Length: 417
Image (cartoon, rainbow, N blue to C red; front, top):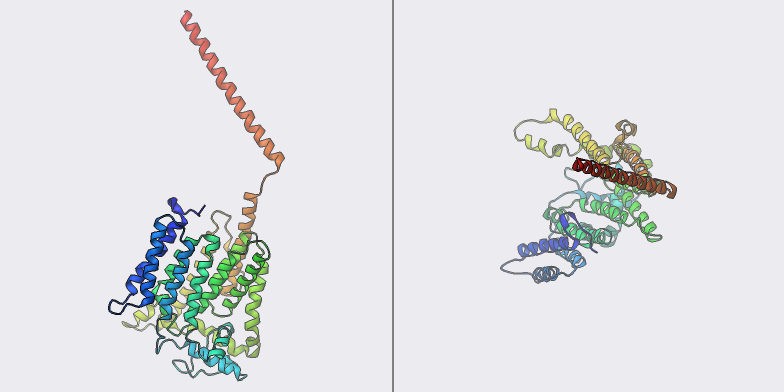
């Protein structure tokens, strides 16, 4: 029986929506004057899948594979942006510096714009690109394949959540123009996102019996650990994985140790190599791009007035708002369990520690609530409860019968009079 969604909507309906999105992309992507064979082929494939789904066939898996094909064509056929972000150029330079036995965090970057910009990414970032760079001599296309693998990972999640649901999410990401553009602009956001997606998708398989569940657990923990050592934003989503494990009764402490251990194994050698240089570069991850603070409002206001006096306020606002958003998501995402007390979370040091501490505190209380709510009663208590209900029903029935007899006798006496 396929999984059901709200209002009677079934998994196969979501698969049809995914196919429709792919067909609409194919229609818009076909060049009228010189139609590409692969894009016309995707259009015809989508129409065939849509017809099959409309006739009642289960096209969930086909829709997922269709999403991978659409996303692959959308990304592979894009040219790399010239003069885009300097992130991958700086990453390649950091790898070269490391291969010469020098510290990338104690080095003045000459490939950045402007010259000498800080290298603000943790070591997991350039270690991620190390093998492709050494093997092919360039890393410009790594993001292209990372985007395709992200779509494939979302499709794999369909094994646990329903093929149609996963296909719809994968297709929306596949046809999302900005996601495809980010694979060509010289940044590293797509690869960072891939590690987080792999971590979450593998997390969905941790409840499987051993050894598959253990393998999924290890893959998820390692992926999240690498994400933490790749880019700082992973600190904001890591607590949600910990909370999920705690609520479901899984060993979240072991997960925390493994993922944090992976991140520490990648990061600690460079911290010890030059603590001052490393910490200085990482701090500038928060302060370097000050023009985009506050949803890019400062950059907009710069056209009309100077904004130097607003930098500190916007910086504090972003830190507080981001932390509050994560904490609220962790607290209100439980769906009815006892809420964590905010003062318990305030003891953690730093933004990441605050977030992860709130996640663990919230998850522990939610798990205990869930256990108390769903733990089966003993057979004796169940028997006593059943006996009590039976006695109550018998007493109500006897009262109703007596009332009816009394009313009948009164009516009979009234008729005799």
